[in-house]
Image (cartoon, rainbow, N blue to C red; front, side):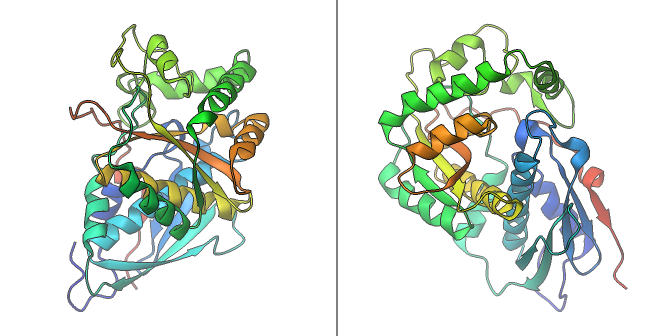
Length: 330
């Protein structure tokens, strides 16, 4: 995966290796709703509407945020392999075509890029209570910079906002409690043992553990347990937003989400993206009213410190061949 030499675009093994790493990107319910095409010169990202959550995400907003996350993961993987990338977002009128990526050999690979690429395999969604994020005074300014550089807005909520956010979370759950389409969709994607996608049982929390956190999606509950039962959740709550609420903003918010998660992971912090609070309009308005600066809330992220460094089992991912189409250079 080395760009040094006469090649002006990465070869097929390099593209496959970069996307093999990038596929670890987070996506709503781990649906992985993306499709890539490498035409021999450029890499194209498309949304895969066959994986859209039509009950939870009828607009496809979270689908596009998910695609933005893998776009940034892919650019990070290519950068670590020695390739600069330039992105044209929403390059044409085709609704499913989200981005075109051009390549150029990089003159150097920064330590920041290496650290973020190394964080891709270590990042996971931690749904349990957390300790406060360590070294927060140093990390927080970097997160603000990272979020804005990637086209989103980022705001850290005051601790006093936690109860109102927990209320918004509970309200979101209550509005869906008797929605059969939503519940069927949730149970289809979560709590199963698919080797390729979805949220496995090992990544879920029990009802008691969810109650400890207060701000979390009510997935199908894991078997009774009380891990970290001695902790009161002390994570910080971030809101990634955008100036407007259109597909381009959603894509950029996903890129910002990816960069923020990798920055946190590289700093040794645990993270948990929360999208259920932004699925329901009334909850989004509650979050917007908590912000100091006007923005359309896209994703809430819990950031803290896990009390143990024990490795977490990786959640499943599709093979690269499932979502990548390769063409020969002509």
